[in-house]
Amino acid sequence: MDFTFTEEQQAAAEAARGVFAQVTPDTVPSPALTRGPVAEDFDRALWRRLAAADLLGLGVPTSAGGAGLGPLALCLVLREAGRVLARVPLAETGAAALTLARYGDPWGLLPRIARGEAAVTVAAEGSTGHGTAELAVSARQLADGGWVLEGRHTTVPWGGCADAVLLPAHTPDGRAVLALVAPGAAGVTTAAQVGTDGEPLAELRLDRARTERVLAAEGAWAWLRAVLATGVCALALGVGGTALRMTAEYTGKREQFGHPLATFQAVAMQAADRYTDLLAMEATLWQAAWRLESGPGPAPAEVAVAKVWAAEGVRRVLATAQHLHGGFGADVSYALHRYHAWGKRLELALGAGAAWEEELGGWLAAGG
Image (tube, rainbow, N blue to C red; front, side, top):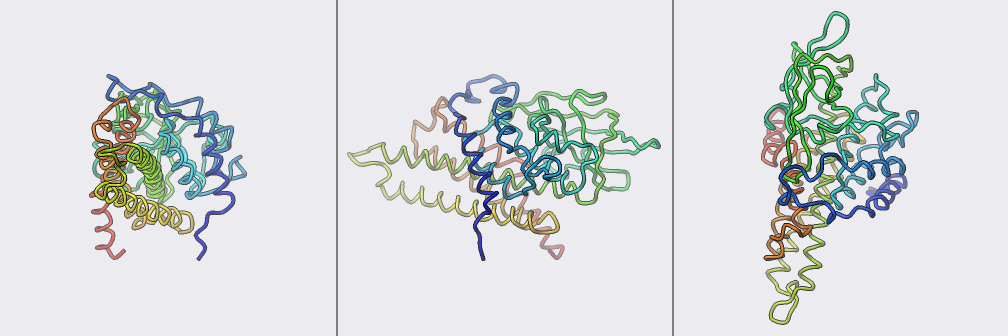
């Protein structure tokens, strides 16, 4: 079996490396040195460069001005984004685009996404960060065809500065639907929150918010959640890979008793274990992305396994990186501190590893 990526997918990854080569994580303050978010908005200049490189429309059909690619290409680009801690809603917008491309775009949003005119985020954590996200908001259809939304979602990435939020909700008969709302619209309010990594989040409150933009296609929310979770795994892989590289460079130069730290067996063994974690994170990520791209549904088993490895793996990689850096690893002005903060957020995004293990167990118990 040929496991190599296609020329189009490799071209997307190469283009992403070129764009992200201009990003320097050291220029952003550490979350430990700021009282609020490290910045009020995402990196708009980087967003424009991504649009100019045609990287925002990877999942947009060619008929709507995109590249017509799938989750694999998106994850290749997100891995590069994670390596430099790119401050853009690329995972959320990319997952939204793939979902609309698959289940329909009744609002004509896809061409705007491809051109970089619409930054879309996703509310996927529910009202508490635990439990079933679509139950956090109720959606009731009116006689004129419109919908009324009631409820709230917490920790929405870039929720206060994105152009639109795609969120799950439930109907009176228990169906899951997707609604598109604009922050600041009538009945839609946001309360500022700050993530572990210092990036701006928002609590989204819906008080009899009316919208005509509801996608009621069966399976759309499950697909969106699966693609978004896989994108989080790709970001975690990029974050962990850079942290391990920084550790290898540091232990190769730092000497104790006249020898580099990397030559000590205890150090080498810890680094080797973390490299094994990265290999497992990568293997499970590509399997999940491939199943999403080639299969008929959201691939619950593969996505759950990938998220478990991403959550546990990135936690171990960052903890070991901090440990092997010694006192230098505790310096909050050093870039490793930001990678550790990002890793913690990605570990818990959409649920910790234990939550996905429970989900996988439930799926297996139900007959898989």
